[in-house]
Image (cartoon, rainbow, N blue to C red; front, side, top):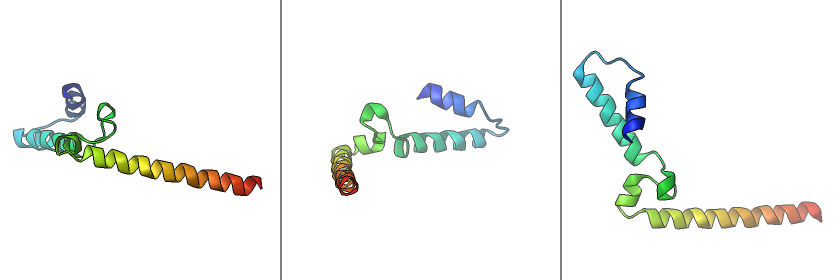
Length: 80
């Protein structure tokens, strides 16, 4: 994530050290708690660290199955 941090931080000018520190803290918060990571099966690092990932992935799979079934039913209704 160092490259991502560098790319984001270098786009701005910071005139006070405190401003830069706040931006780094905000980036770390976003990166760990909001940004989904493909290598972690699209959960956040915080979800993976705190053990919430399996429940989230299972819930997504359930929703996906329900959506597919719903679409199949809709397709069958239109085809009939």
